[in-house]
Image (cartoon, rainbow, N blue to C red; front, side):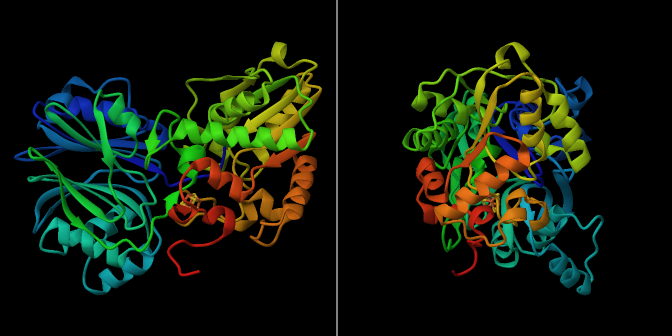
Length: 459
Ligand code: SF4
């Protein structure tokens, strides 16, 4: 996949020893969330910072390690904006990094410009930082942010007092706390904490502001949260398979999604296949779930090019398509003469799954049955992982309405999609099955890209 964008990852560490190297490791474990920029800021009397274009390299250079002095700091990986950003302001010297998307950035910039504020690029991070810096302290600043910003964000702010970590009032993006003797940390995903041998403490709550310093974690404010709206796509695709988000293992959710797809095939008598396979990497959890329920052998049919970047974090469509082509090659021996159930997480434009089906057939597959863990994507995302427009969504080319609750409509779409991508059949999970597999109450999830309902608006 695909055509998703605007994602990124944040990390913060307060330690009793020099922290730069571990922050570097922390963001390395979040690299799947963004590969265009990376950066680290540390605090030692003042802020020391490095940011770079591209993926975080294998090692932090000796000079950078020496320069990034301090026992607390923050790190960031990004697709679009170079972060953290360092500021001198009435709050002292601070550095800010966030994961998410500000929907009303243009309006906020216009309003601030009218008040005499100036902007360098007009990036989201500038808007966020300037709103915080107008207030008397960071907590009041984050409070002001929650009132002014429409969108999704998980945020870290580095100051002389420690690291402030905050999640927007709906909790769209994940943010989790971890600890080990002498170290307290916050990260976009638990894998960054687990792989640094920390115990997972808990998720930051929607609207919660946590200060991390030598006293550990302190909740310094809890803003009113109208409802939770965790991004359902995190479990289905975005997050790493080894993470746990808001109490639900990503692997478990993906296995469940695959099992439900298999269950439907069992019930509908469509289980005539030789092997179950995945579109790596995002389809693996789903395919294993399908295999578990169906008892059909799991077999790899694509060899994953481990040095290729995840395609959705490429910044242009052309780059994404080139990368998608480069990253998977067909294992002809496994495929020849086989009836294959091919599992993936979702279909966005449909071009990539079309290529995969075509590649398998060219290699001699007898049949390819595509099974998709997510319901059809019917609406662009406003909250940080963005399909560009309705026109680009494959399912939308067929169904005009967002209402895919009727089973008949879903079946019609599946038949159309199978024809469109050259597969022998296509099946999606419907929305109710998808939600059931997550194990998160429906009212706590954002499902807007499937049902078109904006969770921040009254329905
Ligand atoms: S619209 Fe979709 S991708 Fe965006 S936050 Fe909601 S569930 Fe996630």
